[in-house]
Image 1: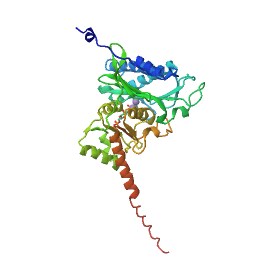
Image 2 (image 1 turned 30 degrees about the vertical axis):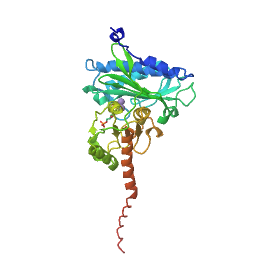
Image 3 (image 1 turned 60 degrees about the vertical axis):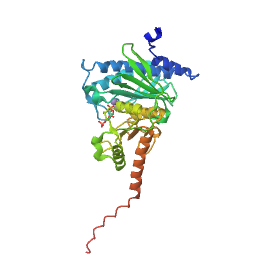
Length: 353
Ligand code: AHG
Ligand code: MN
Ligand code: MN
């Protein structure tokens, strides 16, 4: 009997993986590694809160709105507190942008070299109905000197400057997926051991796919380019899959191949999703996995952010599908450019006196 078969190895823990990766950079100080571990710890705590939300009184609305006029759920508030506390205690982060806070949050760690943008709980309308939800985060190195509070310039950097980004999906299993710009790796949480284990090494997203994810309830206000792309997906007999939690929709498409779209609509003229803590982190991940992310005409990560809670249209997923969407949008724009200018409305003749 092969004794090894009786006790399969448990695999690589997230902590060990982060440490190993750090050894690849001889001058790394370990601060980014510590920061990633802080996020993982907060994720474990939030995971625990989510799992028992039906049992104690933390489901449902909190009774207030965030800066974007969205109803906050109790778990939005709890997750926000947990992540901010973990980042504050960790000491590596000087400033945080959070979906749930109007202003930049100064942690008091003025020596911290990093800034973090975070959506503490994504898909919060799905909390009460036991559908997967998530956390999305993005990490930048500050550009201002240490020793004082972080500035707007530290927080408003384009996505191309991210040093790490990731998400946690609280789903049928809980996973943490992240990149530091050297590929994408996914870790699954083992509840009984309280550890994340490497389960999805070197994630590569399929070049193309047959899933499209868009809220078609708003289709009346899609631009002709977006409408034509959606029709193209139907003509190709793609499957429509949209659960309303960006993290869950993105994660499925990352693994299976597909495209997620949140375009400009009548209700959300610049799209709904926020550049700093929803679009850019996922854009970094998808590019590292071989996919693509765009606002329809431009690479997401090259957009220069102007305000912390800026929104942008979002097309993300398999490279070929995002390019296809962009080509439909370009055709539409071209068509608009070549439309003859409307006839000037004839002025009313002024009656001769
Ligand atoms: P959040 O819960 O962080 O505010 O994000 C909600 C987002 C995103 O998760 C999801 O894809 C999208 O809102 C769904 O919006 P619609 O209900 O308009 O489709
Ligand atoms: Mn969100
Ligand atoms: Mn959120």
